[in-house]
Amino acid sequence: MIKKYFTAKDLVIYQGDVLDKDNFKEEFIDLIVTSPPYNVGINYNSSNDTMSYEEYLWFSERWLSNCLKWTRSTGRLCLNIPLDKNKGGQRSVGADLTVLAQKVGWKYHSTIVWNEGNISRRTAWGSWLSASAPYVIAPVELIVILYKDKWKKKNGSRQNDITKEEFMEWTNGLWTFSGESKKKIGHPAPFPRELPKRCIKLFSFIGDIVFDPFCGSGTTLIEAKLLKRKAIGLEIDLTYCELAKRRIQKEVGLLLTS
Image (cartoon, rainbow, N blue to C red; front, side, top):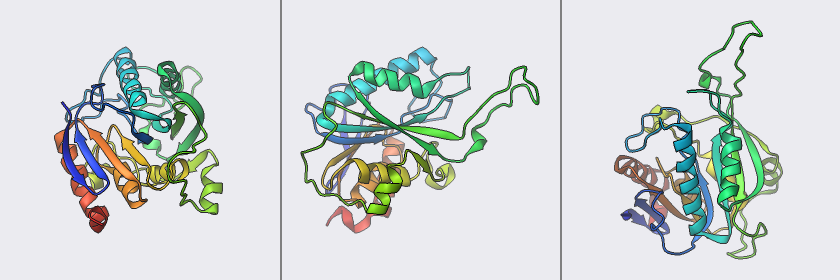
C-alpha cells in the first residue's frame, strides 16, 4: 500500500510499488522523467535486477501501463534506458522497450542518444582481434520521448524557462555529458542531474507536475523543485526514500518551505 514518506512545499516522496495500479486514483502527471532498473544484476535493496528477459518485459509492461493510466492526456514520458545489453545474452533493450511502451498505449515522438562516454560498461571483447565473434558495445544510453494522447501542449502555465542557446543545443538529439558517481551519491544506479534538468526544461512548463516512479536518490525531484515544478516521486525501498529525502533537504534547502 502506498504511503507518504516525505512531504514539503510542492514535493512529495511516496513509498510504494510502481506495479500497483491503485497507487493513484486520477490522472495528474504532466511529465515523467525516469530511469527504470536495467536488469543487469545491480544489487538493489528491494528490487530483483536478475530477472529472465521475459520477466523483465512483463515488469516493464506493467509499470509503463500504470504510468500511462496516471498521466494527463498531454503528458510526456522521458524514458532513460540502455541501447542494448550483453549480460546473459545480447538483447535489444532500447528497441524492445520502445515497442512495448507503444503496445500499452504510449505514442512515440523521438529518441535522444546520450553519449556518456563510459566504456567501462564493456564486459567482454568477444573474439580478440578476430572476426570470429567480436562484441560491439556503444558507450551510449537512450532517452526515449513518448506522450499519451496529444503532443502539442496547451494546458498548464505556458511559462517557459529555457534559453535560446539551451533550446538549440538540446533539440539536437545527441547529448554529451558524464554519468554520475555511485559512491558519491550512495545509490547503485544514479543518473546525473543534467539529464532531468534538460528533460524538464525542454518538455514541461513552470508549475507542471513532474513524476519519477523509480525515484531512487531523488535526482529528478531535486531538479524539478529547483526549476519551479511540482515534484512527486515513488520509490519501493525505504533506504532509498531516506536517501532521496536527505539529498533533497541538502540540495534544495530553503526552497522546500518558500
